[in-house]
Amino acid sequence: MLHETAVAWIRRRETITRPTTPWTETPAEFGARLRSVCQDINQHCDVESLCRKLPERAQLVVDAKGCRISA
Image (cartoon, rainbow, N blue to C red; front, side, top):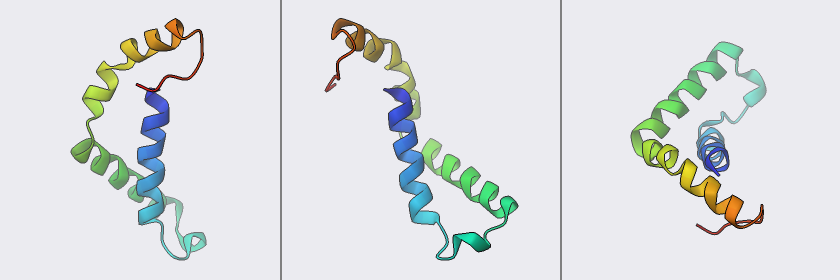
C-alpha cells in the first residue's frame, strides 16, 4: 500500500544519512536531516504516481478479500 512504500523510502534514506553517533544529533539536526530526506524522495521517487495508484491498489485488496496483493 501507499504507506508501506513511503515508509520504505524514508527508512532507507534515513539509514543512509544517519550519523555514526546518532545520540549526538540534536532535535534540530534530526529535523533538518529528515527534511532533506523528504526533499530527496520528492525529487527522485515517483511520489505522484504512487499517490494516483492508491484507489486502484485499494480495490485490488478489496477484490482479494484483504489478502496480500503482488501488484
